[in-house]
Image (tube, rainbow, N blue to C red; front, side, top):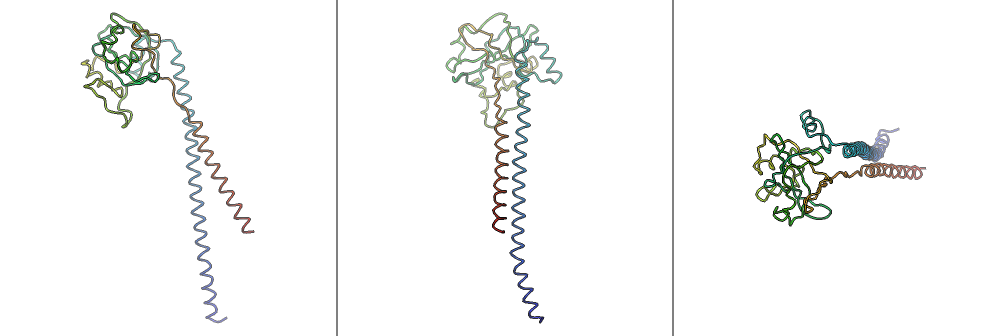
Length: 263
């Protein structure tokens, strides 16, 4: 074969190999992207399953604590000192309310806008506990409009221990308006100082009065603690796994179609 003929064959082979190489590269890239998408979808589904188990455990713990017998306040204090979780633990309380220093937390209750009333409760030893006495409508913010509910003397009741927040839960939450005594997040330090209380004498947690507390005149309305936690993780897991299955089906269908076209 002549040198000229050999060169022509080589050039033809090079021209043919170019499209084949490009096709292989596209196939490898497409396959890699598909595998990456599948890995992400399966990881998201597995993460939601893990969140589901966590949420179910949390709901079970809340239910157990909600139905448990109340414990003395000293037990909650000891748990805080030991770094234990006190959220939603039932507790018995005794003391005297200082209504002149109540703080107002913006809230809604049964579709109505208003406030949760956080009132300092002076304990027998002189220390103070901030108690969420319950809900009042917006127009009853001034204590004079609900004088019957400003109970005096020694009170005894049960409630739920609530953990203090270390920081604002989200940047979307407004800043607390201290001059107007309107709180958008439970900043125990700000509630303490704005009420003129001694921080060293205030317990480092809150208590929500439970529904057994019936205040004269009907306000504040006790029993406003929110126990229901959204649990949509199973739905989310099914969605992610379903998308992974759908993607696998699309890829399989395309592969079969190409096989048939090739044959």
